Length: 193
Image 1 (cartoon, rainbow, N blue to C red):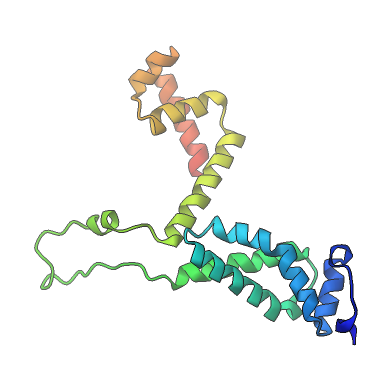
Image 2 (cartoon, one colour):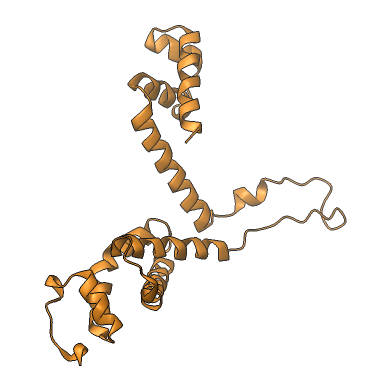
């Protein structure tokens, strides 16, 4: 019986562990779990704001890994395949969340309704947190790669520090048209990401 044999988990390749799992060796799956738990936990915890949800999701990821290991074609490295499963599990958890709705029935609602009040009175959903973090990461990456130092400075002054075009032009000793033009180019770069 292959699963009764001892082996050194640190010197055993992923491929050898998969072969052992396919032959029924539970210990080999435990090694895969321990080897990739930290990566999966880190990946999931960056996308979910609740520790209990993170722990549940990580367990769901490894359940999916174990149950779909036979479909692993070895076209990608095992860690990439496992993180792909983690992405799908996280995405499916977001899809399960129901978003609040507002009734449009005039008979049951007062005549004046502030459609933004539900958004201001509730906490962001995990999906909204995830999408926001993903978008911020994309914008930061695009800014670092595509914007000049001057465009970064202009963007920060105008959009993050809320300085007027006139103030920025005065601070940087530039014309207002120059500031507007550079801000336009910076926004164009960032909005196409």
